[in-house]
Amino acid sequence: MRKWIGWIIFFVVVIGLAVGGFFLATSFDVDTFQFKEVEILDYDDFTINDLVEQDIICNDKGCKFKDKDVIFTISDVKELGKQDVVLKIEYDGEKFEKTFHVDVVDQKNPEIILSNSAIIVDLNEDIDASSYITEVKDNYDTLNVEDISIENNVDLKNPGDYEIVYTIKDSSNNEGKAVLKVKVKGKNEVVSSDSDDDTNQEVVNFSWSYEISGLYSEKGSMNQDNHYSSIEKNIEVGWDSTFKIDSSFVGNGNYTIRYVVSKNKITGDILSPIGGGLPVSKTDQFTNQDSSSFVYTFSEEGTYYVLITIMDKDKNTVLEKELILHLSSPSEVKDMKLLTEDFGEYLTIDCEFIGGSEELYFVAILNDSNDPRALSDEIITSDNNEIRLYYTAGYYYEIKGVLVNRNEDIVMSKTLKIQK
Image (cartoon, rainbow, N blue to C red):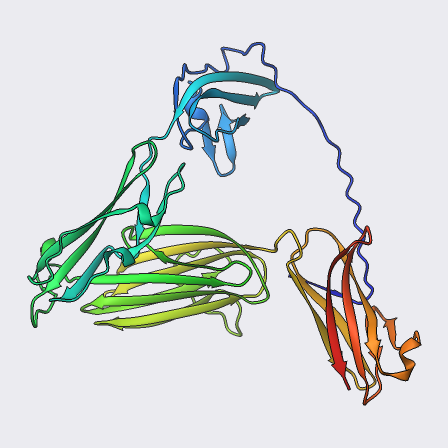
């Protein structure tokens, strides 16, 4: 989000030099790299080490071989089937290229995401098995939740432990599977035990749902199956981008849930800073059936880390979810609003807008007014880098605010009506 005041004009001239290059395809130094004889590649699941014999070490900072940087590109693979995949390498001042004639296949199973991994129900209680499906993911196909087959053998008339099995297949016949464990309680049965045996451990079920509002809006659930997991999202921020987490608990015992928002990776104990700011934390207690919620409103762009931790009475971590949210302004202007402040004789008119990757300037025009001075150039002025409207009580003024780029194209405009 950016704020531009008055007739402030920012002109930025970007001069780019395009440096062309090409990779030599004639030969390569066998003493440096030896390429593998590859006939099959797994779609969206291969790296440079699947194509060369040497062990190239890669991390988030880049790739190295023999302590020297390896810069490489692999041509895009957007479909399955026989095709050419081109690997280009730049290493120690030399450039190499190899074309692989391969059959690209999909061998990865789809993933069914459930909102819960286990539930507890009473005798004769209805179960809507499909309501526990959050989404289905696949590395190649676009699959729908409606395509999932559900095998529900739960006998709600008899106490016991049951399973609901969810399956789905993609176009390559890979099968994804998820299981929802269901415990049907007997009448007056308490689902807990003091035994140390794993099968008789206290039954605990936590579930999380989240909601993002603003320019980017989304609702979903965070799967409980992975006790320690991370979700990463890119979000376009708006005027008030909020992130809300709802937590629910079913079980017995005493548990603590802690929510933390930080601009840095969250490790160790978190203390809320005095006087506001980040990190921010909230702690709630759970007993029996309970619920909790946490809401945070983002005020600026950047990367935020949200950590949800469930701890038992001995402060042991039971479940933990991390969300990494990348908040950025959209590349195009999505919305603008006009802001005023009254100084008695005049109003200042400012413009605040969301998005935009180019430099813009703001112009305010008197569109209409019943003020006899409407034709005067002195009603709207630019003083000290401010746009001012010198008004007279009893008249109305219609102001048109315009965002203009350096080519003098109108990007967006809004109208403001003022009655004094």
